[in-house]
Image (cartoon, rainbow, N blue to C red; front, side, top):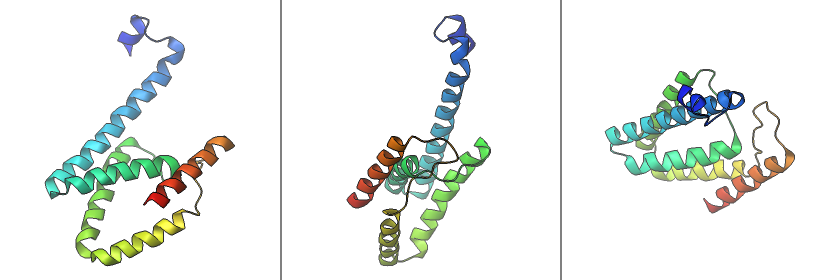
Length: 138
């Protein structure tokens, strides 16, 4: 941050904004790397990549739970994935597919979560439509 500020790449007004963006970038990459590590260890790399893509797309457009501390988020994300892998082993694939189809049908009627922040109506409708298209595609 000091380098960017001293070389006039950013202004003092933008310092906190840029710092937040860098922190989010690092935390998101740590979460993704943790999933890839668990995928590699469990030999489920394709499932891991699919999980990351699906989770990010749905989470970005639907909203959801936010951990209060970044460390909790970094720990919860691979734990969620590891539980998914465990469910894949414990449940017959036909039951899992049926359960997934039922959930996808419910999700068509859900609305994006506003996460206690102001969300413009246009963005809200755009997120809802995007989510519906993804779910229909599934």
